[in-house]
Length: 172
Length: 449
Ligand SMILES: [Zn+2]
Ligand SMILES: [Zn+2]
Image (cartoon, rainbow over all chains, first blue to last red; front, side, top):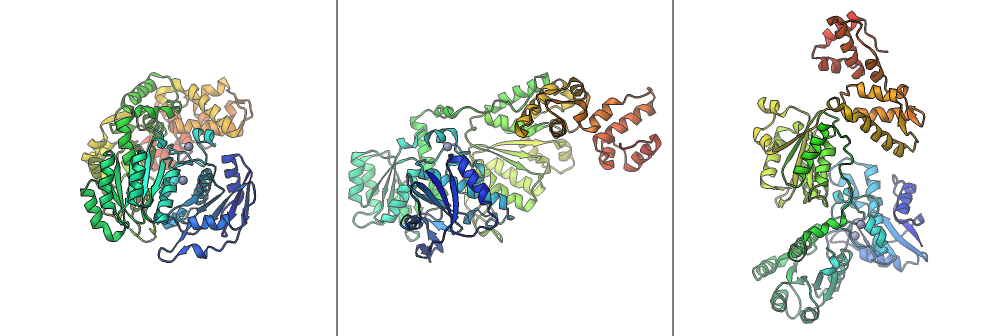
């Protein structure tokens, strides 16, 4: 089993090496990063000006882009939603093979604050580990420091650590 | 404790709504089931128990309003939440009158959804379970970050233990570097709030405009660049504690805001109208003379009395010198781990210097001195030569006579060294003006070596 991060966008300032290293140490599995071109056009909702993440996951699952014996997560910068909710940071198939994480709402400058590349990198890392955790069957954790804690605000993400807590490690 | 023990039923004729909510709650660990119409919902409720039902108000056949009544007939303790489109909020309000717990409008704000469900589940837990179950996750920090066994620090431990169990506002006072934040964290870690975060706010470090949004959050569009809603520190600390460091630095405008929140335990986000309620314990720290600030009109008296309920004074390090060896060893171990450098002891001569020095920067200065010594020194021990120059310098010099001039000379040199020969700072410590200090330096021919 290994993990693939599919970069669906050019992330200039992202330290891909560090990202892979951090994800690797969270799960103790090999992590590979590769750039991928996926046409998200069909998942765009013109009314909401957002992309349907559930549909993107279907797209990915049927794209033939996932290798056997791997979990694949798309990293994008699109604003994502699932139909009933106003937005999501990411989505995953619980106990499945695919996931998606978006950097869109992780940017400080969208909250009227100064740009902070290092913070952005940390938030992306945590969000990726969180969604991947779901693909391994992990559900939300009560421990606010655990990466599997549910976050509805970017500030909640900042409270978490980029790793599984002890009890989530046991369940992993 | 376990969410698996709680059941959520989702009733909606739209498949996409059922599926997204199903998944959302599954990830929260709940037992979830769905029904696409009223008949199916009633059937499912008869064969299994649920705690919460999300019911779409507009469905073909029996609508949500009517279904709600039938569901309640089957299970009185079921909590019903109505899902509505913006247009039908009126009928949702009618549903509330009929006994629905709350309603949500499509698309639902994820935070709102989480909040509603958490509130309901927490209420049910209070009824059925002993809250003490939380203790299960227990482990973690004793006071192990606060080191020492002097009488003075033991008194501090005692105060921490006493106040931690209560919900009282705490004011921690002491010179900078005495470890006020550690005390705040220890209080939090020993309180029943420990499973929620302690959120530190450094009042001295943020500018006034940002501080408001930092503390109370802001709504989308509250000001230029605020494209999305932001959660403030008070909301983040909900259930836990908020720690205001350097409370003496808060501007007058913010003092008013703070007082209002502390009294009402509620506030609105910047640019928002919705009233947010929070359950937060307040811990503050300062190295300033707040009483003087009150007298001078720089700090509001009413706020001062709000904060000054239970005070913990942290002694400066020079008043608990017997703790220095233990502290020094503590930092040595800590840094040797971090730096991966096998330093295992402090040479007695070096320790003697450490104990005799006055530490105007307190524990922080001691920690810095040990860190520096470990960088420059060679394992396995810290020796006198590895210590910062000003420590050795001032401790080594003894006045040559008991004349006032000689003692003044040695004292001025000591302060200059402690302040790294920063003239303004030294003059401030000595309580003389800079010109006088320059004159003395010339008179005694003092030199920065
Ligand atoms: Zn999640
Ligand atoms: Zn966990």
